[in-house]
Length: 249
Image (cartoon, rainbow, N blue to C red; front, side, top):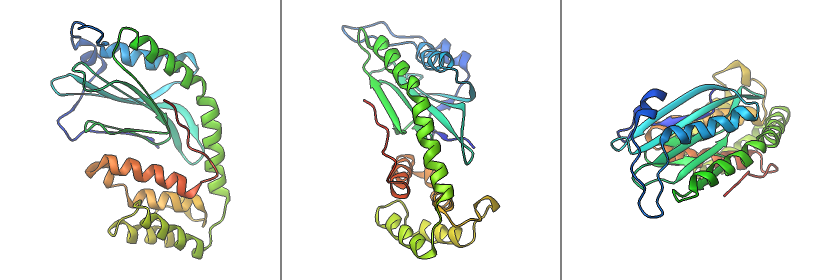
């Protein structure tokens, strides 16, 4: 199950690696040093390969006259429950976006500039910006093993911890109060708790609750990616508050 979402609804288009690398890079002006999109992608991939991670799925897109680049990479790093670790990347040649890299089991990249996951870094297009970007990626990739272990523990805890109907109803109410669920998606989440659409979620536990709510709010990923990303992050904190969020600057 892919954990990344590359959502395009502002005119962006999916491209191949060859098309991405053919995009010309503007000349530097003052301290501004635009980085070729191919270099941005290669830096992310090289750090992952060097750390022993494979890439099982790659999605690339260009926008705004090929001045903005967005991408997601799903890694060969499975998590219990069918999730994977994914990386999001973005950059621009028109000063609209910094050099961006994010990573986690819930990664959202959108051409409306939504960019979220468990770990997010950003570096400016300056004289040493590309070097700082590569260094920051290398640091975070080295930490991926720890993050993956923590996420594995979180998922295992959710799969092994039972939920009563009373506690489940309380969590659904809190999810609604926190804006994770809406008036439209709440009934769907309740139905998924009472009778899951998939046999894998027969047991009444936190994992069943997470997947039911995730399914209920799924359509929001297309209609409002930024709200969906925020709701997904809030859901993780609601259902497993004992696992702290991983943040980086």
